[in-house]
Image (tube, rainbow, N blue to C red; front, side, top):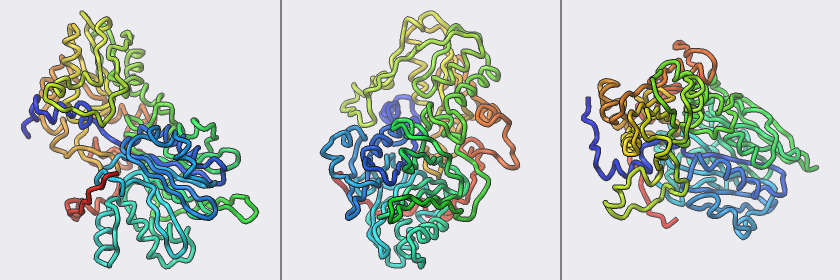
Length: 500
């Protein structure tokens, strides 16, 4: 096996704040026919902020012109300003929050992306990743296309422009039929709001309604924040076209884009990404996470005095573990919510504070006790190492780690920013005991894949036809990986420095 990464490198210490976790790269929101379209979109994006913190963008249309505001940083940094919202007039708008997994962090990659085509203007925002995006991009550039971003969303715009169909909706469907991978997408034209979900249903997308006006967004929590009604999930492989008619009414046309497969929602939506108050695939995320903790307590019991969550992701699972085991639940770690991803670490002395910049031990709940630390997942293990040490420094007699998901062995190509396989903790050691010794815990156990499936779907995994996307645990990828297998993933994409 590969040698473990150093426990004291600056990269590891920096990883406490950033690298030792998984990131979803974006969330989308769109609304048609509402006089407060941009304001409602900004509120929806605020609810989806957990899906991406690097940048946010909104495009609107006022009946004459498209308007775009794309900014680096958080939604609240820009879109709470009435002056900014006044620049986004109109009754149709789409928005996007981003964490980059493809393309560099630059303003030119901030979505929604807009293009003026023969059939009129169109703006697109998407969540996920195209596993043939770089392959298609290379083909387009070889054919004379000019790409202004390094985002694979731009590939869709080029395919729409080159389509031979007459209507925008048909061109859009023609384009996404050529795309592979996991995605949910919203697009807007002068009169249409279009939503689409990948044929396997890896990435979530829901439909809602406010005052009779259609809304599409990544999670139900974005509907809740504006008082909208949940209608249904967009089905896998479905394209829904909402169009304003001359009399002001809205016509809704749902189509199948083809290549539909059995739905396999991403399990990490339940483990980590989705907000706990969201309902994904008809299932409460909060209930699923509590079930994970309860199943974990059945599979990996331990004699202890207190159950402590690693905030915030481990909290529902820790509650489930405590209820099932009968061990008291306490907030033994307090999270500092005001440390962002852009925290500046100017010196080695400051870096040495490590995980304490984000988490502080609550000594009164820990000292002299046998502690069960419940986390939602472990990626590289560097944060776990420092949290265990922090709990010991606060006087814990024993520290037992319980993880409410299986070990992560494989990288993702559908929009989750995962480290390379050899950087994952599970691939750096040849036994669970060796991993436990690395993070310096008294014991370490992970939830089984069947335990996770039971927590989310109520039944064990079907190896012949898995009910969910779970390749990061199993290596069972639900689609072709054309870019990876064709080595297009390693092809260079030019980088242009941006002040955005």
